Each structure stands twice: as structure tokens, then as C-alpha cells.
Length: 188
Image 1 (tube, rainbow, N blue to C red):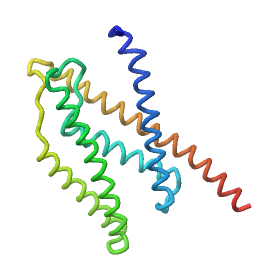
Image 2 (cartoon, one colour):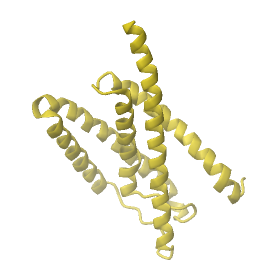
Image 3 (cartoon, rainbow, N blue to C red):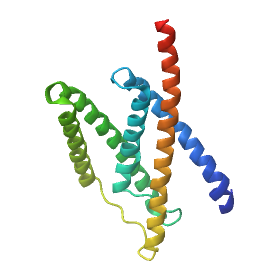
């Protein structure tokens, strides 16, 4: 339908923009659920939420099923790979939320530092079990240049870091402005 040139220029930019807006909306929902419960500033909550979403929605799933360049993988495995990847994203996000809730529950008994370490350990062990249960997929042809694959995966990671950092910082600044204005008007 579109040429490769259009896909790699306008299409890629539009795709990143649409993805970023969708993830920003998801961050807004999570922020609203977390902000009142956390004893942190709006900027800190937005930054921590964006960081947690980057880890749980992209970095950890990419460790098991890393991104590949278009048209490199076997076409007959695309449905299986997509379903397994989406399952892993859902499990990772759910287990991440569970670990955060565990931290909140353990904080009164263990303190912030030890509860945080327990939550991190819980998430790491839980994800290790998930990684062992889910099948590995090795569909990239051995003849594909390893340097190209490495560069693609590195650029994919860089793109996600930029997207999530931008979402977290911009949302945090805007949320802080709105919430500080509300606080000032309530105090007056």
C-alpha cells in the first residue's frame, strides 16, 4: 500500500507519535491511580511511573522476545510470536504492579529500602519463572548480519527510552503545574 520510503520516514514518525500518545494516555491513567497514594510530588510520581512502565512494558519483555527488523523473521511464526509477546507484556505489567503492591505492604514492617529490595527481588524471580515457562523463539536466520540485528535492537531500546523519558518529564511538568495551581487556589 505504501512504499518502503514512505514507511521508513513519514510512517515511522507517525507510528512513534501515535504510540507515544497512547502510552501517554496509559501513563495518565496509572498516574491518577498512584498519585493520591504516594507521598511524592507529581513530577516524581510521573518519572517513577514512566520508568516502571518502560521496564515492565518494554525492557523486560524484550529480554525474552527481542525486537527484530521487519521482514527478517519467519513469516509462519508471526502469529505465535505476537501472542507470546503480548502475553509476556501483560504478565510483566501485572507482576510489576503486584511487586509494587508488595512494597507498599512491607514498608511499615521493613522500611522503604528493604521493602523496595524485596519488591525488586519478587519481580525478578517472578519474571525468571515466566521466562522459563514461556517457549523461546529463534526465528532469525543465522545468515542475517549480527551487527545489523544488534544495531536495530539498540536503536529500538534508545527510541523507547527517549519516548518514556519524554512522556514522564513532560507529563510530570504539566501535572505539577495543574496540581500546584489547584493546591494554591484551595489554600487561598
